[in-house]
Length: 311
Image 1 (cartoon, rainbow, N blue to C red):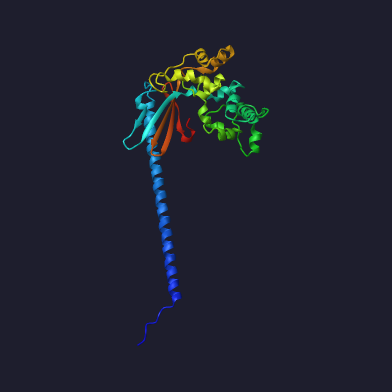
Image 2 (image 1 turned 60 degrees about the vertical axis):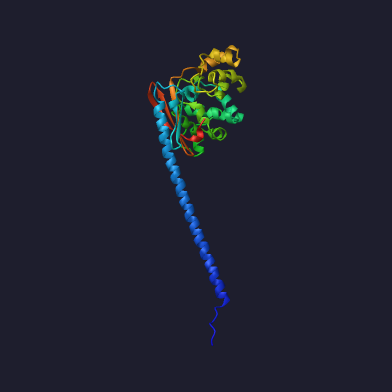
């Protein structure tokens, strides 16, 4: 009787290795497919969130632009059943520094003081101050530490500076030296405007800006901020108190020097006529902030601000 011929052991081992390789390859293919599907799903959720968040922001913007709506109205905050929401904030556009007015007045106090508070070195602050002036003046004469056409051309930037006032705050990022500011203060855009007469509305201005204008430390602002927030201590509510004069501001800050009171009178106001309506739409992890600037019920600027630039 003849026994069945046995397959060599090495052939069996090779087949087993081949099976393991096939399993590994199939596993890699399944894993890659799953990752691709997960990426597509996350991208789809992100796009859906961006669309819904923008729609919510637009809803808030249309409600906020109603001229009779007070800044503390409950309609300025809304939560949808599916977890989305919008938050609307109405402030005076003049709660910011008008960069064109500052440069036109040849101010040598506020901008240097601001740059110093942001941590710029003295030489960088001086160079940026001069470069900003060179950007808006009509000649090609370079200030001591400034930058004109030939300086930008050396850096490969053709057509700069514009030699005119800034039309939008975003143009400031093109000025030589603003990259340093961008690194130190990514929210620098929230400090400036190109609208208004240059006087800052103290009722809506951020505390740091009031401290800058009055040249006092932040702890001196406590009485002013407490009064401004009203009895409940919360901003943008019905009991908020509006400041009325530079003299009142000076008294709350404990300032008695006539020259500082005069400085505050020059650079402050208390009822800026330009309304800035900021509406943030939120859906899931996505936030989109739309801005509408209105004067005399006419829209003069509309756009979207990246969420990373929030104040």
